[in-house]
Length: 267
Image 1 (cartoon, rainbow, N blue to C red):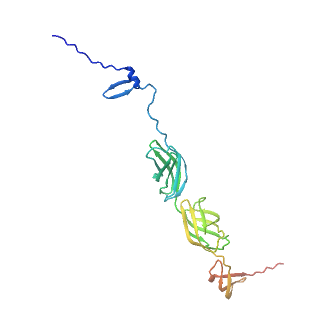
Image 2 (cartoon, rainbow, N blue to C red; image 1 turned 90 degrees about the vertical axis):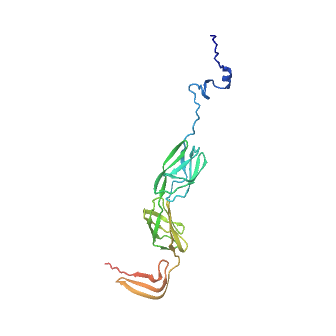
């Protein structure tokens, strides 16, 4: 039997051609190409750094939220970007740049909360960055009448007054010597104002409470007329009253003046 010689095909590659096209190939099989990367080389891309918060434009507000806020920092990049306040998403979040985010404060319960910004590359927490306060209430001001020159001592009662974070205006004029006695009581002195009824406003980071027309400035001088009556109220005093009289602080029906008389003797 005649033997037939079998020739095995040999595919030769020019090393010069391969190296000219790029790094030498170690394996070519089934369409998979594996590069013979040199030891110590790293061809993976570098991820952007995680975000950082450095400042926020406001640090306190009412439970209802609604205030504009600006958050500054760095590395605000990628998509999506999320910012939460106490777990509530910032409303109308807008990434102005890699260093600035704006939005509207969401509603939240009373207390201090964290701000958390998250990007595809990490997150950052600003611990206890924002405080929510309940709105104040105002139930009364005593007395509710005063002279236009000011100087009347008054007491305001209500709730949620904050020491160091409360302002009071009577007719738009700041209360003088304001003191927050506690969360339900404020004392102070009225400032000067023109005659007439005015609003009383108490403001805190939680909001503003208003007593409409709650205080009356009356600058009219008193007048006396009509029938005068005199009544002894004690051995040393009498009470005078007029049937027709006006006073800058009192109802004319209540106009009464006490006149005191006393004597002393010495030896």
